[in-house]
Length: 89
Image (cartoon, rainbow, N blue to C red; front, side):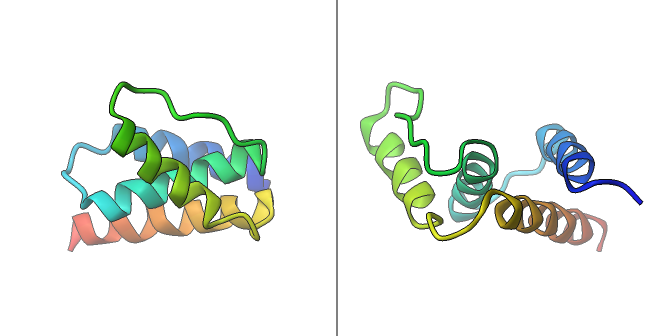
């Protein structure tokens, strides 16, 4: 059985290779779950020149502050799996 970190890394590779256009709320969810999974509550300013977009990203991450890093990884994996299934159907 693969570890959570192995499954998360695989899900990240799948998500990174996705070419379909996703709704902005889904993209924010990906961003926030990834940050929570990899940084926890060690918040950093998002990169990018668009202050409004950065504010949305940071807010989405703040909203997940009750999740542990492991819970965020599980939810990230589930999100990738759900998006992948939608692409197939």
